[in-house]
Every structure is written in structure tokens, then in C-alpha cells.
Image (cartoon, rainbow, N blue to C red; front, side, top):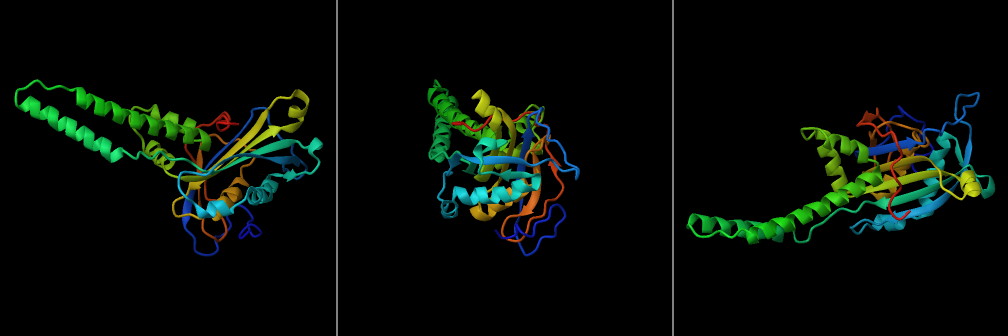
Length: 289
């Protein structure tokens, strides 16, 4: 893939013109997941096998997304997992980890009757005010009904936003900002990001030997990567997400982080991480798994 062979880590110059986008990264690990270090100071190698997880196609037609196969994504992931000394194995019985891969585009809430709902409220409010001005009995029934329907729409949008927050690793940072007395810029930024289409890749690594012996899942680490999809090419975006993931796979970082990277073509440069809050526990895996 373009840019992968020449990528050497932090501080690499960006070659060629490219649009700079903000990648959101959530990387968590179980408290007891501690990798032993070799003489070179790097984590000792661990082997893994991939397991195909959920694919979410998003709510809009994306021709680029249809062209990218699961095998294309795992190839890019394997090249970047190697940066953290994770290597694929064909010997399933001896694998240290089984890595479940979820990918696709988030679903955004679109209210087909948004304009109608607004017009209904305005009409009911106007009728109520006319009755009040005329000294007549003003029945608030129609206005209350219109407002209730509008609240239902808002509730559906909020529910969808919360689902995306859990999927992409925003949940704890978002909840912390929501608990503040006054709305913050970070809350607004996160809400806007979660309300738009975002390409994502989620890796969930389980202890395979524990699974074989105990017949139960034990989550070791989770990495969640996402970038806005409007204006971006799915293949280039996934490539960039996997390269960014190569710096954090298997690691515990407190808080949601963002890195500025070019998404279209060129090579990737990871700038300083921006801390958005604490994320001390792995977020539950997506619904359905």
C-alpha cells in the first residue's frame, strides 16, 4: 500500500499534498495485560489470528467502501500490528491472541420528517397564541402533542449518538464533559463528530489460550480508530487509520486522543497526541458480538 513501506514512525515528513484530518484514537488494555520486554527494550513477540467481526455499511451509498475487502483491511492491519511485535500465525493452536476486527461507517440519525415537525410546532403555537390574544380558551393539546413528537425525535438522535460514542471509544470522555455545569467546546466537538458519518476500525484482542482452556472470553486490549468520512476515500482512510493504530495497538492510553494526519495519499505523520480525558477501562464490544 502507498506510504506503508516508507513509514518510519513519529516525526516522518509528509510527502505530497494531502488533506489533513483528525483521527480519533481510543486505546485501552486490561490492567493485568503486561507484556514482557526483550533485551532491546521492545515487547516480546505475540502471535495472533484474525477473526471477522461486524461490518457496518453506514446509511449512505459509498462505492469506495464496497471495493475494499476484509482481506485488504487485515493485510494493512498486519503490517502495522508488526510495529508492536504482533505477528500472524497459521498455527492456530499456539496463537496468543485472537483479534476480532470490526469496521465500516457509523450510522447517523436522519429524520425524514424534521421539517414537517418544525412546521407542526409553529402552526400549533400560532393557533394557541391567537386564542390567547382573542381572549378565548386556548387549548394546548395540539401544541403539547407536537412538542412530544419533537422530543421523541431528539431522543432517537441522542440514542444514536450514544451508540456511536460507545463504538468509537468516546463514551467516557463525552460523559465527563456532559457532567460539567456549562457545555464545553470539547463536548460540542465530540457531539458534532459523532453526529456525522465516520469511517472506523475496531480491534478487540482476546486471550486465545484462555479461550481454548476455559471456553470463555478474556479481553486483553481494544483499539478504536475513526475519521470523518465526508470528502474522504474509504481505502485511503482505512490505510491511514491502520498506520495510526500501529503506534498504539496493545497499549493503554488514558483518554480519547486525536492525531492530525493526511488522509489522501502521501505518507503519514503523527503529531502530538491531544488528551481529552480518562479512559481507564475497555469499552464493551459493539452490539451483536
